[in-house]
Length: 178
View 1 (tube, helix red, strand yellow):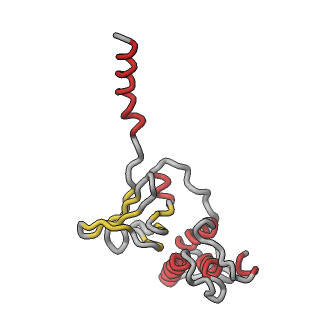
View 2 (spheres, one colour):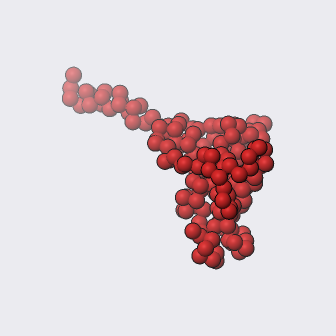
C-alpha cells in the first residue's frame, strides 16, 4: 500500500474520534417542559407541547429540585451539567445545616446585586436574584426549622462567587458588598 493511501486511510479512521462532541444536556422543568443545553454554546432551550423556544432568563427550578440560571439565553452550568461533561464540579460549600444569622444568602445576594434600597433594580442579575430569594423563602416556609439553610441558599452562596453575572451594585453602600 502506498504511503499516501495509508495516510488517507488512517485519517478516515481517526476523523470520527476527533469529531465526537459532548451530547446536549437535558432535564425536566418542575412546571413542565424539557430544558436542553447545548454543550458548545451553553444556549438553553425549552420544549413544551412540541414547541422549542429559547429558555427565558432567570432562575428555573428543575424536576429534581436543582436550579438552572439563564442569562441572555445562556445557561450558567450547574453541577448536573458539569457532571454530564465530565468536568470537576465546583468546590463544595459548607452550607448545610448552618443557622442563618442576619440576612440569608439569597437576601445578601439581592442586597448586593439590586442594592440596599433597590437602587440597582434595573441590573441584569437583579431579577434572577429575586427569583432565587423567592425560592429560598418557599423552601424555608415548607421546612419545620426555618432558620436552617436550604438547597437554594447554597445556590445563592455559589451565585455570590459568580461575579461576572451577579455583579455588585455600584451604588450600594460599602457595608452591603461584604
